[in-house]
Structures are given as structure tokens and as C-alpha cells.
Image 1 (cartoon, rainbow, N blue to C red):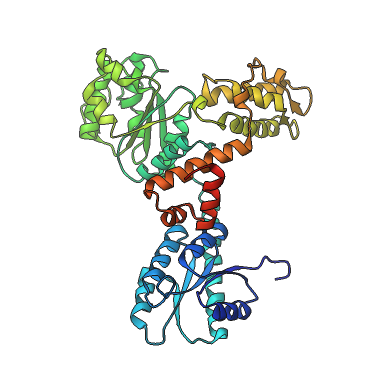
Image 2: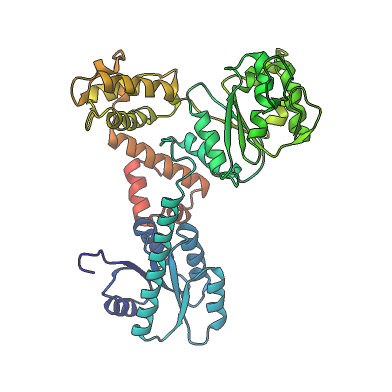
Length: 452
């Protein structure tokens, strides 16, 4: 189509004449070339081509296929969706089949007709495009389980990956984190990413309900069980049958109820208050608390056996103050949300307001940021929210806090190169492979950073 960006094809061929012929034959594509495994990997890292044609015989030993198979495995490890078309010798069926077994899309025997190879390349591009479009449609129809969570922090991203891993199991999950860090969002994420997502997600705050009512809320009650019990009422555990039950602030659960909850976790049956019949319940339990349960155990306020029942998977959620950059990221998102809700137009944060947000420690975490921004959106006079609207004290600016992109980049590059060199015991070739750059580029980088 007119105006459509040319599709990127990587040609891996060590023969300059054949490489030139292939480029000329496939000028309808945006062609990249590489003559060896190292430069091919660099091109894959930089350009992420949809289709690759490659000869198995590559330097330093072009008569062997070991280098070619090694490159094939590395390309598919880095970019598993890439369609690799392997070019083999006329009587090299065994290696062709081996390449297909490793994940290659197709193979062609040399010498080949460029028109037929072009048809195969075009078909590979179409398949790649279809797979990408299918992935986009699936994502649109099924939003990510953690779509409501915003972060760029590496530790928080690890938490998200852990949630995605444990969601498909039936293990009990214990979420530990300060108030306002998003424990319920993560609990809902466990539910939405699990096979139980079509069933109910039921949450109960153990600290918000008086002790004398909490048992009936959890386990339900029979008609006439106590004064005012006019009808049989199922509890939260029974209501969540087939789905997920979140027990928020589990550290505040009364000691007497801890024994009853432990029995349920062991037997997976409940008895309603005033009842004698055992009712089987299939429910996934997710617990959360801001308290240190091990300290509560030591003080005799929490049962140790219950803790180990609940702590099959323990996930620690970092506070906002330890998530560099997340405070400003969340603030901008809340400005967009609340300005739309309040019909205030396209509001933005001033530079001073953003700076104050970055320097504040946010003891109330995400909930505090949300309340602060909502108030600022309502109270601001214009379309730009100032530091005065935010209502935060201007902290003393620390020179080291100012962003110096060159320094940050140099430190990041130094750390990456030093780590890779350490991992390979100083092997420059393997270090360049890990970093996805060529050896000359690595030497230039080491010289600039003062590394030997």
C-alpha cells in the first residue's frame, strides 16, 4: 500500500557477491545484511526484523553448520516471533529438518530461484503480521489482569510477574505492604489472571467489622442463630464459592476466629453460625496486611500454624517512596483521570508541582497521591496545577537529584559492561553477544568509560 512502511528483512550471508544478489532480488523490502553470527545478532537487537534468511555455513568455519545453528537458536531466543528461513546445500536434508525442529519457519536449498524465495518471504511476513494482529485483538478483548496498576519500577514489575505466575495455581497468596500500596489491586489481579476469573471476587476488611459480627460475616448464619437472625444468610466465604476471597488486614483477625479459619483452610468446609451441617466450599484465598505477622506471632496475637497456611506464596509490595519515578507517573495519570471526571479540560502539572511530588515521601502511598491530586484538580484556578494547589512543602533541592541524562547513561552503560565482563570472565566476544553489540562498538565503549 502507498505510504506503508517497508517490511524489514535481514539477510545473513558471508559471500559478498551472493549477499549483493539477495539485496538486489528483494529490493521491495527494507533489507539489512550481516556476514557473521555476531553482526547478525547486533542487527536483530537493533532492528527486530520480522523475517531472516540465513546460511548455515558462517565464519569462522564456513564449512561447518555449528555457527549457523547457534545463531538460529540465539535469534529465536531473543525474538521468538521472528520467521527464520534457512538456506542449505542441495543434499543437506538432515540439517534442513534439524533447523525446522529448532523452530525455523522454512528452508530453501541452494541454488534457489529468487522468485520462489520471495514468495516464501512474503508468506512469512504475512504470517508474522497475522500473529501480531491476533495478539493485539486478544489484548483488546481481554485486558491485562493488572491493567489498573501503573509502575516503571523494576521491583514492582517483578511483583507483577510473580502475580501472573501464581495466578494459575490454587496456592494461598499473602500480600505484605504498607497501607495504600495497592494490595487490593494486586489481589484482583490474581483473580483476573486465574481460571476463576468468571466467578466472584469477594473482599472483606477484617479490621473494619466489629469482632462480634465478623464471624457471621465470614461464615454466615442460620435462621434464629441469634436475635435478629430472621433468615438463613450465607457468609463471605460461601458467597465466593468457585471464585476468590480476599481477607484484607488479616493481622486484625480475632484470635478465636483464627482457629476457625485454620480449620476451613485445612478441611475446605464451613459451618454457618447456629448450624450443624458442613458445607464444602471451593475458594481461592488471598490475604493482605500492613502488619508484620511474625512480630504478631511472637507477641501471641497471631497463630503460627495459620501463618504457614496463609504464607504459601508471600509477596512484598514496595512503598511508593522506594519506587523511583512512580510518584510522578501516578500523579500525571490521576490528573488526566480526575480532570476528565470533573470536566476541567486538559489539566497538567507544573514543573514545580511535579518536583514537589517527586521529593515528597508519600507515607500514605498511592491512596495519598490519589486524594492529593483529586483535591488539586478541584481547587486549581487554571488548567495548570501549581505547587500551591498540590499543598506540599517545597523540599530543599538536592543537586544530586537533578536529572543529568549523560551521567545516568554513562553509569548505566558502565554497570552493564562491567556486569557482562564479569559474567563472561573478561571474554570480549561473549560480552558483546550478551550486550547485543559488535566487538568494535564494545572496544569503543570500554575506551570511553575507561575500562580495560
